[in-house]
Amino acid sequence: MKKLLIAGLFAGMAMTAQADNHEHSTSDLIKEAMKSELRTEAETDRDRNRRPVQTLEFFGLKHDMKVVELVPGGGWYTKILAPVLKDDGELIVALGTGRVESMIKDNKALSHVQVGAEASNIYRKEGARFYSLENADLGVKKVDMVLTFRNYHNFAEDGRMAMNDAAWEALKMGGIYGVVDHTRRHMEGNNDENRRRFDPVKAIKEIQAAGFELVDFSDIHYKADDELEYEVGRKSVTGNTDRWTLKFKKVKK
Image (cartoon, rainbow, N blue to C red; front, side, top):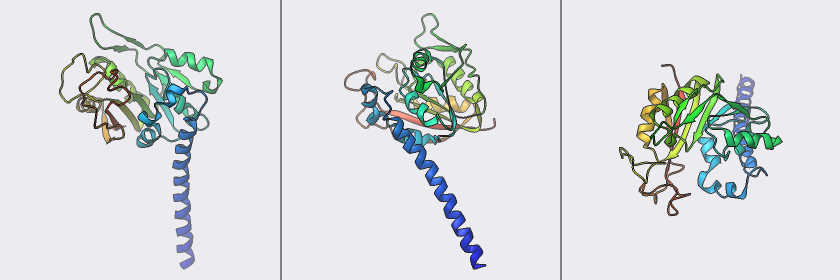
């Protein structure tokens, strides 16, 4: 009996060690990716502010996941995610991928990155302040995680709904939808200083309406000295904006 108990104890310790090693290896891969020659000095200068290790750990990224990055912009996060997922996972970039597609073509180290939703169209309706989105189907199913960083504010309501629905359709049941954006005061209307900010309460309401469950939030990007008063591009604010970090899960509607 004692031998069985000891064997069970060691088996449990081994499983715990394996889990710890798995988490540790993903964190190490993120840190290693941050040293990649693909990244410019301007990009690495933003590491302290954007805190990619803590952010991706909060969302629960693992190196063997199938991940979609929405609206990757210039590829700041793409250059980190791609090396992490290269060997055991998959990375798909989708929606507004023009700049990243050029980067993929020019860099062999990114040749494994896939491009989804190639028929999508991000546009502004006549007289509109924010963007709408057509043909948002990401073209993939049962992915583990969908991420988007500082993009939610760019879209009009119909565009946000299309993006949330696309994330829902692409994710497996229980999959994670991670969203980060610049904070706007709750219930504050549009003005010239908050165009690139978004009310986190409104974001939660909209994303939940798409069927997601709010799993958690983080204060990783909380900035006490951002008074939520000025445009994020102003010299007094840029690089120091308060941002909300929300983690959602796909559940049965």
